[in-house]
Structure formats: structure tokens, C-alpha cells
View (cartoon, helix red, strand yellow):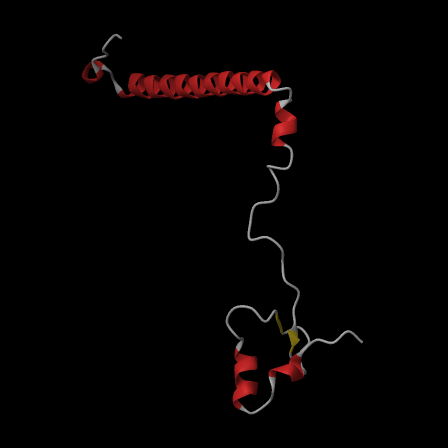
Length: 110
């Protein structure tokens, strides 16, 4: 590989070189990914599958999973709810300290 004397290049030439190197890296990565994809497709085909069949369902939602519905509701402000998981909200703590039972905040299906 030819060695470039960077000290002899001016700013414009250095920036052009950087752009060329970034483009070369991008193209190299793209080419390697295509080669890997082709190899994966061939391996799947040799086993009697398509790559799509093997990957089906693997790209599902990523995150914490299901959202739990609220289990408790503030009696005066229905917008304030709690699932019963995690830290208790202040309004629950205050009510319990005042002697109100947690079951009085349960959301019932009427």
C-alpha cells in the first residue's frame, strides 16, 4: 500500500482525501454485508430453507414488552392511575398513611 505524506497536502486536499476514505469505507462495508447476506442465503438454502423463513418473527418489537393496564385509580381524579407495579405514587402512599386500604382504589369493571 502506498504511503501518503500528509504533511505535504494542504487543507483542501486533506478534506478531499478524508471524503474519499469515508466513501471507500462505506463501499467496503456495503460490499462485505452483501457477501455475508449471500453466504447466509446459501447456507439456509443448503438446509432447505429461505433466509426469510429463518428470520421470520425475529424482527419483532423491541422494548420492555407488554404494557400493564392500570389496577388502581384515584377516587377524585380518574386520570391518576397506577398499575400496582413499581414505586407507589404519592397519592397512594398518602392514603395508606391516612388509614385508607389499598383495595379501596381498585379499578372495578362496572
